[in-house]
Structure formats: structure tokens, C-alpha cells
Image (cartoon, rainbow, N blue to C red; front, side, top):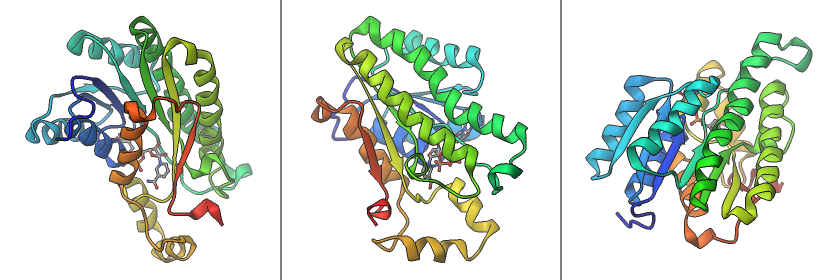
Length: 253
Ligand SMILES: NC(=O)c1ccc[n+]([C@@H]2O[C@H](COP(=O)([O-])OP(=O)(O)OC[C@H]3O[C@@H](n4cnc5c(N)ncnc54)[C@H](O)[C@@H]3O)[C@@H](O)[C@H]2O)c1
């Protein structure tokens, strides 16, 4: 362990898989106590086991981020167990099947907005009061490159991810003088179960992605985790309200 976050307490939503799991493991490796929050119990417990096997301290709290009472309990259990909340990576999210804007069913629209956007707002609503009490804290929200450019066939996803950036900037301004930093990461194509399910539905998709990628490859969850750890560390103490893109150069074109 390099332990740059030694003794701190980190919360990761959607920590049972992909980017969330890699970030929870990275927090543990850097010496933070980690709360893994997610809907899926066996996978969430598996992330906790990975952190403990590497010598870290972690706890799983079953949470659906669309339910206000569960999000409140998630933060409550974090503070009850570890006494504080230093870092929150609000990452839980989902992606809809492809459908043009006019063909997106209303229930699907509500589901995506509730999970990706309301879930982050609810998480911040309960994380911020604890950080205010402490006079310090760092929040990192997970958006996407689809938060910066249009994404044909995924209107609800792109709308939710654009809104996360506005939400992040607003909270960063509101809480800057209270010692709380709020930033947002925008990953490009990252190899996770979410992307793999898209690749299974369309076998040509991976070749299309690779053709678009200036650096010729898909990113790893660990590459996103590294950026989140940096944003939480004191090395980033002057960084707030920032949108950090990690996409292998995709949006630079
Ligand atoms: N993989 C990519 O290419 C990519 C790119 C940009 C942004 N992202 C974003 O990264 C985040 C993580 O995605 P991933 O690729 O690791 O996918 P993933 O499917 O591996 O992980 C998603 C996680 O979110 C959790 N989750 C979903 N709905 C939830 C809910 N209602 N309550 C609690 N947890 C819930 C899942 O259980 C899982 O742990 C998402 O917000 C996604 O939009 C992914």
C-alpha cells in the first residue's frame, strides 16, 4: 500500500462491479476504510473480500441509490461504523438499450434519470451534511464523455450525464468555502460489464470503437480509479468544480 489516504473513510456507490469495484479496491490500497454500496449483495461482498484480502478494511451496505431512505441509511451506516466520511465516489449508473429520442419509453426514461441523476443528487444530499459537520470532504461524481457530447440512441443516458456536470459545478460553488471539493470524471470507453454487454449485442461494435480511439484501445477501470484517487488526495487540494475527461483522446478530435 502507498497509503496516501491513510485512516480516511471512502464511500463508493455501484462498488460491486466495473469502475466502482476498481475504485473501491484502489481506495483500500491507499489506506482508506471503504464502504461499498450497491444493490447486488454477493458481488458487493466480493469487492469487500478483495479489499480485506489486500490488508484493507471495508464494509458492504446494500443500497439502491434511487431510494432516498436507503441512501440516507448508507451514509448513516458509514458514519456509525467508521465515525466520518472523507470521500464519496458517486458512481452507480446504468445504460439503456439503444432507442432514438422519440422511441424511448417513458418508464425507461424515468429509470435512467432516477438511477444516474437522482441517485447522485440523493447521495450528495446525504453526504454533504456529514462533510459540513467535519468541515472537510471530497465528492467525485461519475459522468461520461456522453456528458459532454451527444450520444445518438441514448438520449436519457446523455441527458443524465450532462446534468451530473451541472449538478457537480453548482455544488462545488455552494460548498467551496466549507472546505468541500466536488469534481466530476468523464470516462470514455472503459472495459467493464456495462460495456461488455453492449459488445455482446453488437459484435462489430468493438472494431468501431477502436477505429474512433486515437490511442487505439479501450480504457481500464483502474485508469478511472487512479484519477478518482488523485482528485480525493491532497495533491488535488486546489481542484474543485472540475470536469476531468479520461478517454484516450476521443474528444480531442
Ligand atoms: N464502462 C464505460 O465505458 C463507462 C463510460 C463512461 C461512464 N461510465 C459510468 O461509470 C459508472 C459505472 O459503470 P461501469 O461501466 O462500471 O458499469 P457496471 O455495470 O460494471 O457497474 C455499474 C454499477 O452500478 C450499480 N448500480 C446500478 N444501478 C444501481 C442502483 N439503482 N443502486 C445502486 N447501485 C446501482 C451496479 O450494481 C454496478 O455496481 C456508470 O455511472 C457509467 O455510466 C461507464
